[in-house]
Length: 404
Image: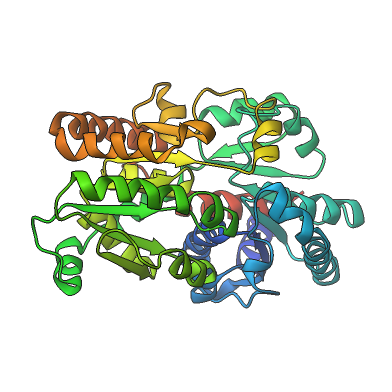
């Protein structure tokens, strides 16, 4: 056999061998991204891929049996995190022990860097031969850029969501590849608004507000009460206002308790399909800053964004931020295309006024929608599906590593 044919045979063998991939996420937004990545990997590699690790309901639907429940690590804010530290560190150790014991072909950690990077760092310390990949790296270009240098010590590759991140990370000696933002793929799911209105008994022309206070316990605690007060103001200004509140299972009980006696007709929704139908049905959204704002932007749903943290957490964060906006669309466009209100500015009065303006001003909604189209283009809308590109990049990385 010629050397070229022998090399080709080895490459084919590497491509056809079973792959054991360990995926680790820390909260629902990462679970959704992990599920999309799993679907992409299965599309490209079929049943050659075996998944282990940590995920939630979305990843479970793609075939992952999680090491432990996702809500054990889905906490945010000093007041919530500090009491949970022993339990979180225990989960870190459990994930690390599992990785070192099973030696997967690669460990892919997804978002939630305060948790997932601890896992990656500890894995590299105990077994440097295990390859580690970061999917949805922290926005270190926006805050604490020095972390990129540290990341280069315990990651072999970053799957970057934004084109400019590649040069940024490589400047610190960390290999990176642009794959696009997976949230783009969810835009196609934004459908069924008319059917949702009919099922819930909401008249076709009734003003409908989607309220999205976040998926973390701390967000329900700090943000939902403010959103509720904003809705109380709006109920007096917009006759016939109806609200829908999509939520996720692990905080649904808290959301229902906090929504008792809501000032307008309220429909609390669980499940992905109903969430996207709510985006389609709603005239305007009032949302906490996070992945959901990118989903709303790609759905072309006009929105107002508000966010509140615990006082100490916010005080410390002020010294670390290097960007002037908190909402992704505003960060990427470099302007406040979407009204956003942080901490002391996130008052019921400010939020209600901004929401009322969108209900009454079609031009303001139109300007937002045009900005949202620009935002989608920057994220890679119209190109190959980001999760498929991420899966392809990951498989190529494994193939190259196998030949080294």
